Structures are given as structure tokens and as C-alpha cells.
Length: 482
Image (tube, rainbow, N blue to C red; front, side):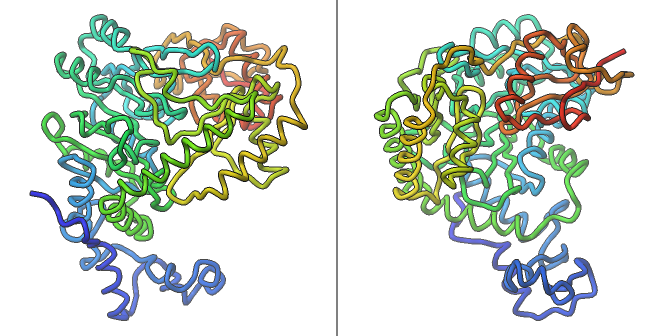
């Protein structure tokens, strides 16, 4: 039965709580801001007054029986799933809960190597073993794409005991695999399909966009509602179709790691945003799509930049594209994407989502206007005029095929020693190294440190990328296996 999407049960319960003027002898200690005047002045009285603790009238995120349960049911209906879980640890926690629900110690999971670090972290936590499918590569752009169905089929044939197939829908750059075919293939081999839809909230509501995972019959999906939907940062949904997955087991897994002190600011933002998306999502994302298309055309008319789109679609690893993503290739003006990213922020007051060695990504979302698009286009025009140079000698690809020797968990917990990065060639890494964003590991525990890897890390640092993951904050050294 369809739900009444005008309802906001968590918001209504918080409003009622405020009206009752409850005397608080529970946590949090600021007591509706009275004990933290500086914080109250910063956030505002209305905001801090609903930073409250779980209680019967407001339900409990770990064991919802009333308003949170009702809000999750509304979200499940809006996002075309049988069950939905409100997550306050970001989509990192959603991804980890999905993998840990599907896999245990020693279980195999088929996944692309260009996953977010949260997926590989989950393997360390639960002991599952990755079967990596190398994504396709666009040689002009130098970026990893999606997974070809034929490659997944080969992985399934070689690993018939795998428990699940993990899919990015879409990738950070907006590229989608043939998800429907992957789901059909995996289910025919009794494997679950779980999806990272951190950047795919709008797929559930917009028109002319790639299909959403749950609508196609995926078993679980992690959705960053805050990224493109409009809720507060760190709020997320974990969606479940219960035909092959027990939602009660999923909740048990979630409660292994998720806080017992769920933020009602985040929960209310999910409740409010779900209502907005359900009632006005089609209209909202029609505007977003139009803005992104306009921006893409204007940037391509400058020359030198390449804002790519559906013209790159093939029948395999670039099966579909999210046209709201403004992904722009920059090497033809002789600048790395991260260099354009830095110039835009430092000289023009424009903050882009991320820049890598060949591209940058601008997120176009519900809060953008034509004015901001025009400002971006004007800035890029001037950057080309002021900084364009030869692209000779520039690093021209973002993906390095990993050499995997052992599971992430075994490598992470193995005995290690620290060596200078330049002395780590052909040794096995015991830790992560990645550019953030996007948070896709250059190196993961259990992978061989190759010359190409070392060159990539050093070049990324030289160009100004934020290199994270290693114990050495400067990534001058690595922990490698003894």
C-alpha cells in the first residue's frame, strides 16, 4: 500500500517535544543550549533545541518502534524498496553494513577495484575476500569506468562460491554499468547484488537518468541523501529488498558499529528531505539536469576543456551516464584537474567537489542557480587564458591496475615495518594510500607497491592532491609487510 508522503513523523514528534517544554535530566548536557551559550549563538536556538536524546516519544534508532519506524517505512516507499534504515554515520557506515550483512570471514565478494575506501574497510572488518574486476578505462580521459558484464560473468565462473556482487551506481565521475544485466546474472548464480549509490539519490526521482538500483531489483543499496538530495551532511539511507535479504539481520549488523546516540538533527533532515523528494523530486531534478546540460555546453564552447557526457556510452563499461554530473577533462590546457580545482578556490572563490590528475568534478544540485553556472564558466575561460600551457609530461591516467597478493584483512593485521616510499618497490602494502576526494585507494592493504604506484603517489603530491590513508601523514613512508 502506498504511503502518505506528506507525512514527517520525526519532525512532528520533535515539534511536539518542544511544545511540551520538557525538563531535561538526560543527555546531551547542554540542555537545549542553556549550558552552551556560544554553541547556541552559533547554531541558533531552534537548531540546538532539537539536539536531544532518544526517549519513548522520539523513538530509538537502534530499535525503532514508533516515529523512526514510520519514517523509515515512508523512505522505503519513496525509494522503491521494502525496507529502509536511517543512517547517521554517512554512507561509509551504510556501505560497511551492506557488505558485512552479505559476507563473513573468508567469503568472496566480486567488486570493482575503483570502490570507495569504505568498501575495502568493510573487508578488513568482516574478513571477506575481494575478487576484483578491473573497470574499463577511457584512454583519453584516463579515468576508470564501470564493469563490463562479460568481466563479471568471468569472475562468477571462476568464483562460483562468491556471496555477492558489489556495483558503483554511478561512479564518482557519473559512469554507470549495465546494472540490470548484472542483477539478472548474479541472481541466476544465487549471489546478492549490493550497490554503492552514494551519488545516485536523484536516480530515484528524476527523469532521463540512469535507473536506480532498487527499482531494478538489487538486494541492497547505500544512498547518500545528503550528497545530491539535500539532507544534512552525514545522513544516509541503507535500502533493502527483502526477497533475498533478511532486514532484521541487516539491522543487527548496523547496530554493531552505528552510534547508539543518533543525531535527531540528521534524522529529521532525512525525514524532511524524503518528503521533499517524494513530492517535488521530479521537478527539482529536471532543473538540475537543465543546469548541468547548460554548463556542459558552455564549458565545451570555451575550447581546451572537455565536459563529457553520453557521447562516450558504449555497450560495456560505459553503459550509461548521469547527466547531472559535470565532469571536466583539463589536460588539453596543460593543467591537472587538481590545479584547476585549486585556482578556482584560491583565485575565484569557487569550491569544486574534487580535482584529480586529469579532471575535476562540479556537483550540480538542488541549490544551484544560473548565476553560479555563469560564474564558473567565466572563471574557466579566464583560467585557460592565463594558465594554458603544453600538456607534455603530464600524468595521463587515474587508474592503476592493482597486483593483489592477499586479503585486505590479513595484510592490515600482519606484522609490518616502515620504509621510505622510494624503497617500497615490489613490497606488499599493509595500509591504504588514496587521494581524497574521491577516496578510491591507489594502494590497499595486500597489494604490491609497484614503480607505477610510487610514481603516481609522488606526482599526485607534487600537483597538490590531498594524499590520505597512510600512518605517515606526509606519505613519505609506508608500512609494508615484513
